[in-house]
Image (cartoon, rainbow, N blue to C red; front, side, top):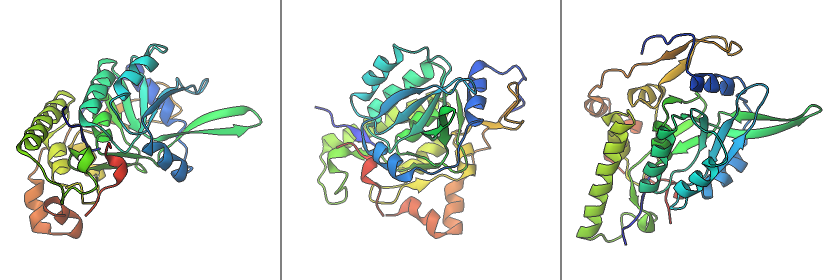
Length: 290
């Protein structure tokens, strides 16, 4: 049985595609409240999909919370049968999960032309009833980052945390340095890195995303991408520049900045944060599949 691996430009026209409008509607209801404890528990469980209806203020979105497992792509297929998801928005809050199953799920998102972002769906109660909002204080870690990459349009709020590290064997994640590995294990990891690389480029990502991820061992803390790095890796493709209340607001698509020799600069700068690229500390258990 094969082992499972985990990790967890120019102005657009005012008549933007419907998925842009969906994203604008979602951003119009972004909330600032933190629900850290509840969100953390959700990120530890297998991924759950739910449709959030925020009418009449916006079109609604898909909430995707939890770890990607072998059952997740099938669970999404079952969920998708009940909804018209073409061009809709997926709001991600996840600690990662299985590499190959995340790739399969990401390809499903792309086939549907979905928009991806990071956030936590929260429901508030008032005299007027329930209202759905999205808190931007959320996490997309490990393989979730590659799910984020699958969106035809991708946006990350400034409060969100996007973190990467190497993929590893789930059954040895807790003792990665002390565990034994066979030649077959090395063959599998190289195969899956190849699959992940192909997927990254198919989705429009850059080699910088792979380089940043594969330089962080599983016993180190996950590396959090800066705003510059989110754009360099093409994880951010849109910024909202007009008033959120305008349904026909223009959207700027940011071109990827020229790829630079980041790692040469890293060595020269030698800051504590940057030294982790070549080095060694510990990732969260939630980033791995048991």
